[in-house]
Image (tube, rainbow, N blue to C red; front, side, top):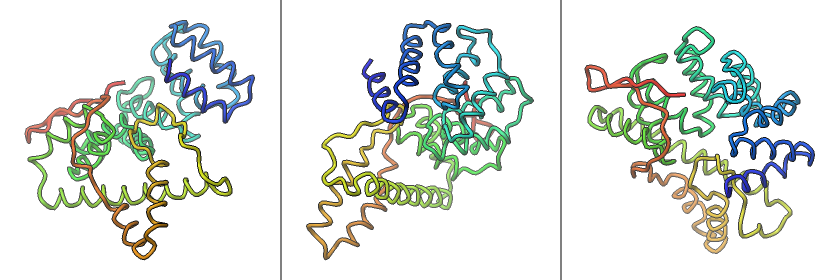
Length: 282
């Protein structure tokens, strides 16, 4: 219930009160496994373009919960949400295309959707994309990129990604490892810059930000960017002569190679080169 409370707090900032009430009713119905009521609550919101409702509606059709299982309809609602940048919907479209659920199997299309979701931080998509690059399935085989995406997901606690990354450890050439580390360093720098801009935009004209900031539980990250940036900014103000150097060190610091673990979306099983190809699970 704590997750639900946090989620509803965020929705409250973005949605009108009537829509929030219906969405809350839908979430409560899901928690109680009252799928017909969830369907009833989410459908009108999905029709009005609410991406969260569209994803939930797609899930109900995908699994056949409270309604007859219908892959084309699931794909329809995922696509509407994905076009609004909803990463979970994009990841689901990757699964639908990979397995050919209501459509012809298309690993290339699947990889494209996984790529979109992975870039937005979806760990399931990152793990699946690492698997595809490791096996050369739907994309050109690239162990550096496989290692990179596995590590991105592992850092957020994805257990399957940790397994995939470990399986590549001995196969990577020094050049491939260097390339993976370069990509990780660039990603860290971009994230730090984005967090800095977001922090400045959120606190512009507001004075000192509040001690606690609500975060979405589905963000799949243990980082606390606002708090970290606040401390970094304060330290920089106290040490202006070395501000530039401090920032550079913060942006390029890379603790990525420390193993973490979390959710799974499959790894391709190893082939003859000890590379097993396991397809991503829905």
